[in-house]
Length: 615
Image (tube, rainbow, N blue to C red; front, side, top):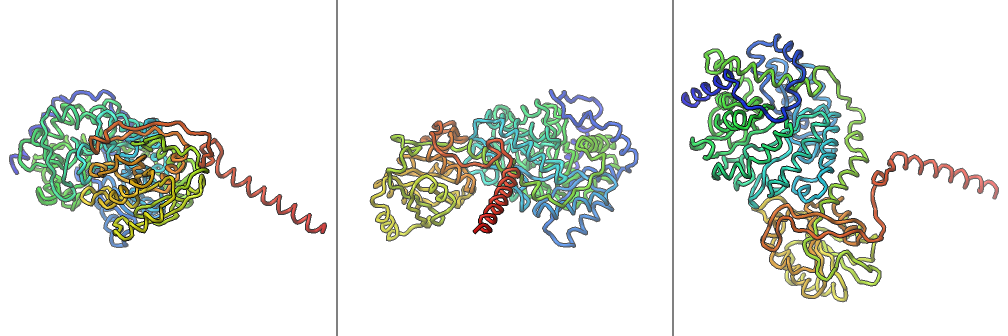
């Protein structure tokens, strides 16, 4: 332990004294922001206060009064620098944010994990597509627009830091923790989309945080429960895992989150989590790559790092490794006390704490925290769920739809009026959202069956399907868990094979494309279209795509098998067919349309009343 602290101390002193960090090509905007304000605030803070500014503690808006009192004590009595909000709701979080900010001498930096928007943590909010779904898109500008919209929602809620985008290149189908949170397996596609997402967030005035440095995409264990090992060479890391982070830095990335990983090519100490590693954080990220933005640890209560030492020592080691903000310390008071002891004894240079505290304060100024702002709870749910945001969400889903098979031009359905069509939902009930949308275009026989269909039931199903020209099958209630077959048991594909032998069959797969790795018979289907997520909007848009109402252009962001490879996707142009959408898609505001409809109804009622009086 002493050797670890001593080496970190020597390196820290060298970094502070030599100024040897190469410049980031486009430094974070906050570095040159609020210098006078930050200096002024710093002058009022004691050594302990400055250490506390480096702590971002957990807060929940769905917990009891005891939890709220604990957070209040950390804010009021310890002066922690920030909060990371987890589960709850927007109104409750807004009220708590106001309460906590009122108690804090220095405004609190509020962060959240918002990879697919506020719905990742909060009820009553909008869920945007996951990054793997977005990885299938061709139009990256829509991702930047999504980033701006998420930033708008964050601003409305008083949140300043989004722990996104995920910059991990997911090249392990069995990855239990990243997987569909990544844009895919191609480093260039991941990088382009991360940059678009980052630009949108930061243009909207919030701090984007790329994660999980130095790259969590090729792991088969979860750092929440253990310490994953990345066994690749430095050359491989440079060419793949590190590449998106480097490009994001060049584009002005504001923050990076360091993962809990063991990476022998970067640190030869056995069992050393990268969060606590000076060679990873200080030597590689800050010195070699020249990153000047905020460096967050991943949550320090995760087993991937929590097993490395006791509370207090973990936070001290994370600070000495080079991290700026210590996320979710297990015992914040013990962490502050231990670091203060280390400062007093000379283990931690006072200049190191001051440098990091100033960086945090400048980030706070850039985020607008130099001026106190109350979050108005009234109307917040409506403000977070605007028609414009809903239309953007639909546009993102529509652009991701990916056609992998279309034998004999089965899709889009050209002449639905002349065909007998059955819709078969595997894992859902008949008449679900997908079926209802299909029913706008044709008379459909709707059937719902369980995923584990018994043999007798399969025979009955085949009898029911007799006489139909086309079967549109769909797979529902899927999962991101590789160890759970992504929620799609083999029996699903056995049923599809049996149906395919007797009928022309098109499959809408509302699940993780990695499941197609073991989906024997999937390539024999007449048509296979991936929708990635079992979502009502995706159901509607997929149904419209099947009947040619929408353009289709998605490409597979990963390689499940040699039959279905990354980049594969058949594009088609919409037919001359009715398309169903929100008013915002054609430049009309929903509110104005509703008002016009109300006015029209009132006029109609008055006219009918006059006619009735005449009679």
